[in-house]
Figure (cartoon, rainbow, N blue to C red):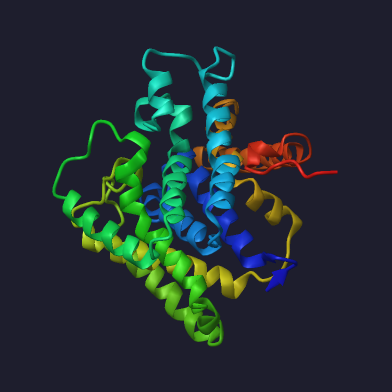
Length: 314
């Protein structure tokens, strides 16, 4: 299952999740279905990968892997360059306060980094995560009765909505839950595939579901049940099906932060081809992932902070 310290199937799960993100942003096909769970899946994976550290080590990890990349990417998009960025009144204060909804379209995917950083800061308090998860769940249910805020500073409301997924991922690893499902491969595979499609059918077509904007459809309990199911099933399937190391997948997995931050600008620069829309969208997906792969390789060698890593000491 592992290659060194890496968990091979987690690399596949992260790559699968980031492909879903890119596809949902460039194509209307399966858009609503993907929006049901693609970001909650990312939070669940993040929780699975989280390990408790001492306070100073955790704060430094948050700074280098999340805060500094967030600042660099936002500053890049504020520059009046041909990439499509640019400054507007209020952008500086909103990006410093993590209020991504009020920033340019290219900058909005960075909301995930803000929410994850706040989650990790909460973990620094060393409060039992199951308590944090229950409080977040109850707060989300209460807040679902109110309208979405015009401003979401530091993505606090979004963080509350998504914290249960992070906590669930943490306890999936702590309890080694996926190892038990892997023991009954074929049965679990069939059940998961069936549940996956059933879950999608329940909420498919509900265009109001968007965790970034705190939209959870008509019923938050149904949202949580379906979204938890889809995220867990996705991780289970990856743990069963993908245990073989792939250098390409490993590289894409290491660079999901970069892909999240740059995929929209790459997509915008792809010319329209004289082919059917579905082929155009598939070509765009392939091009985005290829360019992203090259950028990740270059970043890893020359500027690892862009993928949330510090330069290794010689």
